[in-house]
Image 1 (spheres, each protein chain N blue to C red):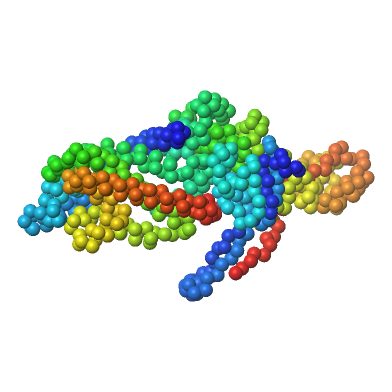
Image 2: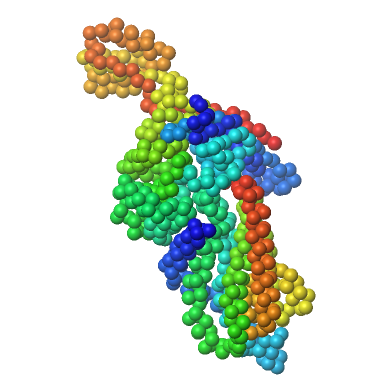
Length: 335
Length: 267
């Protein structure tokens, strides 16, 4: 990828913390007064990637993998220990106003709206904060309100909104200034399926209309599948995968699933692979990836007349991700 | 500049709406706060009477005036405490505030300014009741009234800036309550809150003149109750300006390092 068109560029980025550590109990507490033990935790450990203008990238990893730390460094909230970061040509940690006006960071578990007042009051304050011309502000606000079907809720104090309604308001507030880069940290956390879908649709629509670049973290694979062609998988602070979502299974799945539909429902296929499903003549087998071709050929040879349909698929994305996340952590330095 | 005014007006508006929404809670809070000056007032008035009519240059009527104005100045002196800093860092609210292209101090200043307007309105009936109950001796001069109008806000600014600067200590550690307590104790003794400083030994009065506390608290009270000459009023305003600028300088110098230090783990 060419760095000249990159909106986000990270090279050799690291963030580590020194955290105090001691055993439980009074003895250990007294000992720690004289001999303080600390541990260096590498939250982000030498990561590099680039994101092009208009891309929607899924940033995946289990809890504590380094996703939020990376997003915070990209948005200028955290100062990197070492490495280079550039977003829209700015160094985020300098926190220049012209930079902050072009980005947004939405954290699914954070509330930035004034709790006791209707969201529209906070929106108006955002207009002043981001110096949005009044006409642009009204047009964007009304457009977002319509897209997210919020009209009826505009006069209600934020504290009286449901979690989903509040999140929609948070998103509107965060996008009123039409940022060019969106850092979305689990924006659909805790929301029901319908609300998740609506927010996803809204983000996709915003990306389509404005050409904004989106870096999204989520534990809901549905978010990622719906929005992101490309995913970056981070674990223990290191990047394990950066590429097409469709290529993730190819790299990490050890198995493939073969779905065979047979005329004869009594056939036992256990010798071909692990039977993980059986339903009205349709048998689902799990087979090691390397043996997929051989098993398929055997099935077609042995049951040439009985097989009416056969499909080979990668395992569900959730299973693949689970397998990636299960990888062991490297040793951390104890001082 | 226009956009900053727009921001201040917007935040001020939100603050006023919010505080009026909780007017009953605000009122109870203010009424609860009256206990402290009333106790001081009763104690010092009794002492004055027993000393032949005055103590430290204050008659019971002047003590009444002092402590009634005290209630307003005390309310004007309520600003963002360092404890609130701990709360905002631990709860992660600061992260959101740092994402805005405006220094967070502007929001705090505008928010508390809005709150003060509400505090003044709510204070008026309380002042009326206290006046009827304690019969203050109040002989303000025109310069005194004008000086008070400025000094009241000046005191707010001094305390706001200094506590904002002190609150930034929370960037280095999230447990700094002991330092704050030390600050508040010094403030209690040297601001004129416990008693007018003229009741204190000379060295305490001299020390108080060198520190900011008096200029945020006793000085505005003295301007209204008619104890200061025009020259003293002007000098006090200059001291308020000095301590406000000192606070601004402290915040400016520390802010960049503080933000760099901000670890935000899990927030």
